[in-house]
Image 1 (tube, helix red, strand yellow):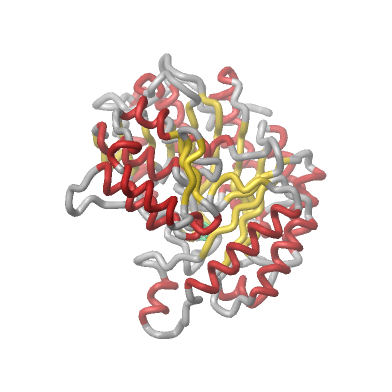
Image 2: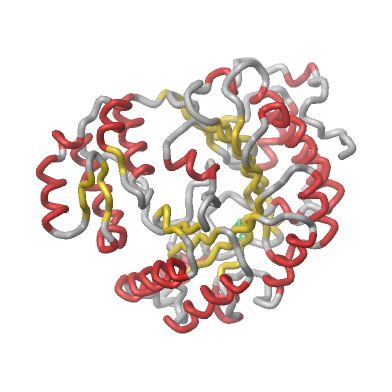
Length: 429
Ligand code: SF4
C-alpha cells in the first residue's frame, strides 16, 4: 500500500513530545504474546443496547481522528519490548470509514507492526458497511480476520436492536469479504432478544452456519446502565426474556454448533479447530495488551490505563502532545489474581489451578477447598488433575461460580466484580 500521511512510522511531530512518559511497549511484561487493540469511536448510528464508547460520526473530522489514532499508536509502540502478536481494530465501526481513509489507517497499523510479525489482524465490521473496495483494502493491508456484527437473521430482531442492516445483507457481506481474499470470518449473534423464539434463534444459528464462518460469538443481550435500551426497560416499554428461556437458547447454541464441528472454547465463543481468536485469548489469559484510541484501555501486566472516552478531547490531547489516558493505576497482586481468575474461568477447557497458584501466589485448592468441593457435589464443576472445569450446568451459572471463587481470594467488602457470562467481551475498553 501507498503510505499516506497517517503512516504510524512517520517522523513524529515535535509537538507530540509527551510531558510524561506514555505507557507503551517498553512497560509491558516480556512474557507471553502482546496484543494491540485500536478503538475507532464512530458508527453510522448508535444502537440502543450498545454501551461501548461510540458516537454517530455525523460531521466529525474523521481524518483528524485517524491521524491522532496513528500518532498515539506510534508513541505506544516506540522503544524496545515484547512483539505485538495480535491486532484487533474495533470500536465503533472502523468500516464506516470510506475506503481511501480506511486504507491510510490500516496501512499505518500494518506498517507499525509488520516487523513484529503478528499472527492475527482482525477488523470489526458491520454487514452494511462492507463493499468490494473496502474488502480489497482490508486484504492489502494485512487484515486476515473479520468480525462481522450479524446479530440476527430476522428483521424484527434487528429492528429491536436498532441495527441498520437487513438480514439479506449479511451473506452479501460475507461473499464480498471472501471474494476480497479474507477467509477467516467471525459472525456475532445475539440471543435473549425480546420477541425472539427458540425457533427464530435456531434459524439464525443455521443461517449463520450456512455461510461457512470459522468462528461464531453468541452473546446474551444485556441491559447496561446508560443505554437507550435500558431506559426503555425502565419505562416499562420492554419485557425482557426470562433467565430460563435464555438458558435454553444458550444450550441450543452449544448443541447446534457442536454438531457443526465448532469447539466451544469460551463461554460465548465457538471456533472451528485452529480458528480460536488469538487476540481475545490474550484477554482471557490476562496477558498484556496495548490499547489505542478514545476509551481504549491497556494492561502491561502490572499497570492499567484508560484513554479518555471523548473523541474531541482525545484528539486535542494527542495533538497537544499530552497523554490521552484519563485513568492510570498500578494493579496490585490481589487484583491481578482476581482478574486472572475472572477472565480465565471463561475458558471452557478449564482453569489450571496449579498454574494460577504459581503465577499469583493464591492457591484456590487451599483457599477455596470447601467451595470447590461443594461445586463438584452440585454437579457444577469437575476437577481433572489440576484443572477446574465447569460442567454444562456450571457454564450456565458461571457468573455466580466465578464470583464465589473470587470471594475466596479476597473477602474485602465492596470488591467490584466485573460482570461475566455471556455478555460481550471486553474490547480493550
Ligand atoms: S453495537 Fe456496534 S454498531 Fe451498534 S453502536 Fe455499538 S459499536 Fe456501533
